[in-house]
Image 1 (tube, helix red, strand yellow):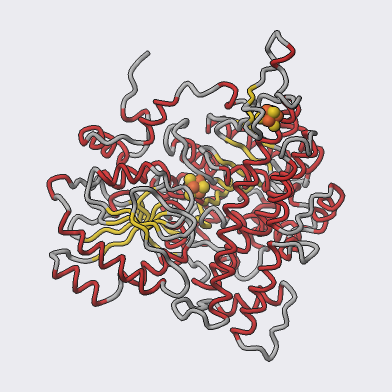
Image 2 (cartoon, rainbow, N blue to C red; image 1 turned 60 degrees about the horizontal axis):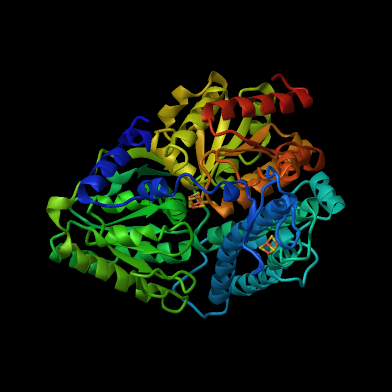
Length: 628
Ligand code: SF4
Ligand code: SF4
């Protein structure tokens, strides 16, 4: 077999340079570790292994000649084992998003009750709007009183004190009726997750379809619950995003400055670090230490949060996180939680970089832990930036290499901004869809995965879609890939079909709109809900789709399932571990269509995925009586 070259791993030129440097510096990266794991276990790849009890672990095979190898020790067959494993993955993904949302509810409550002065409400108008939407009286009430009532309502969404989640009403009536009929309307967010852990204990729910419906219910509680709460409260506390010009790729690091990276998901920590790097006293200290300034850049979704609201440049996505340290120019990485590879601690050890963990939920062996809470956030952010400045002296200039030049991007397209750009109403967008100038819209979202050439899936798919007059909305690590590819500039309209290009030129927007982090996929389903209501149809009738061409995370499975459960056709790149069960696979790839009006497709080739999506959009347009 031909040996792999650097360009087989990633499409990014900054990635090529840093992979070469990593090899020269003796650094082991995620791709090296991946190669150490292949071939993966065939049972696990198909979802046919189970560790749910101490009679196991079991691994079963329908292909086995012996009957006794077709069932686990308890008698569970392939359908049950695959569905249980899938259900637990969705539960874990939804738990991660929703627990992030809960942290924001706690922060809002702390602001409202005076337990913190480090955080403020930056968008009181949105607070008012959300309060009224969820039935809280705002008349003659002060901002803190309203914030307290909002946070208490959202606290209750996690438990079981209410019948349904408040934001469910954002879905059109047809969809809500369908959920009710199927018995999947989410109740409390935590309740759905706990119930899946209960059902998947040995000897509880032993029927694949029943388990899949509960997985669907959990996913809906994530999309229309935990994630949506996280998005809306982040906007209230840190400001609703508006378009910002910024930059992307490793060249946003500065050779002559103290470089600090924030990595993880929750803006509660990263927003405080941003405030601290602007502190004149710390800037003066940096100068005294010989640096020209303090440079803050983002990685992954906490980077997306800062980019969307503050225009902070983005250094890279999931598979670039280790390579960012290989530049030798990073003084500190401040992390909160989720998607932070433990491997970065070993990579940091090869340089002078300090890894700082901040969440009581996320400790890393070998990293320094400085815990953030609402009472000490400002103080600790200052302390960390000071540590980073002090660490600048330990940088070895001869080992520094920052590749390339930064690529421009425009970010910050919240639904509020989009509505504003459209003149306050969705009508111009609906008109553009009706005339076919915009044939449809697709959320290109999700992670990187070393099983797929880094960023190839995202960039190829997005280019193919905009060429076909399909607007792309992106979030998460996909959004970093598309920014680095130059697709979030006004010049990128040249790559779009003539209809989409015309609309983008008229509105002054790129053909790929950055709508945020992973939890902000809730902005996309909310927008779908608004469009469906305006057209008086179900979401499943809209010419829209979703794709996660390089997903890896359990969170991405939850997102994919809530998209499908909301009526949105969703294409996955890597195959989920369900192929060991024909029942579960058939359900995911076609059966769900009859149940919720949408299903999954799996297509690792992004050009072929674009064709699948194009066909689906043609079908939807035809059913609405629109030209294909
Ligand atoms: S729950 Fe059943 S299949 Fe799973 S490990 Fe226990 S005995 Fe094996
Ligand atoms: S897109 Fe995936 S890898 Fe990236 S931050 Fe989100 S969950 Fe993590």
